[in-house]
Length: 224
Image (cartoon, rainbow, N blue to C red; front, side):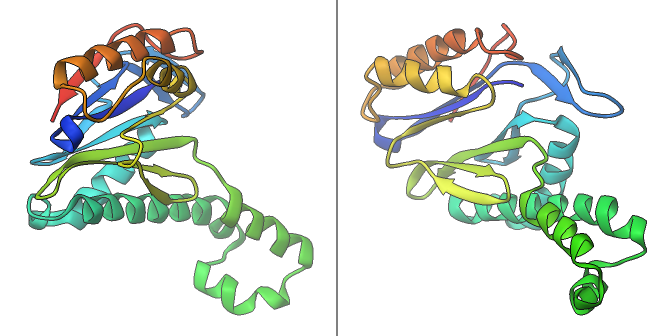
């Protein structure tokens, strides 16, 4: 899949972001390739970024909708509000794909389904409810940036939950995520470290993650 890493430095004074440049998509078949043309670290406002691990086609829908939700206020909002906007966009896009694949082929809208589900055969209701609850588009996001209180890190994961990582100070997602996390832990990462020290740890974590399937050897680094 990929790897994306975010780590605070200077007790939240700034943040180092890193990703490989492996692109993953699933239409019409699953495929992966390395490309400098497709960003994995995407600026969503003047001081906030979204890092993408997973299907870039689905991710583009989420980021586009999140930008529309932020509108002109994006540069003045808190990071918690920006993360919430990305979370809601994730849920909206996920639900839209479920409706297109499970309800619309049966001639149903989501409203009609909920109003009339007691009339449907139980196996149909069970199948649709399982999709609504469990369908996984196979994508994760890191949302990181600065507001008046400093830099912050959030993740957005299936089925659309947001987790705040400032207490730990770092996070990694994607197929290479576990390797990167253990690298940071073993290197005794601390939020109080300097920008130079944290960037060196993040680069080492990215390098270690390259043993995981689907992680490319190219690296992009952004410092906030």
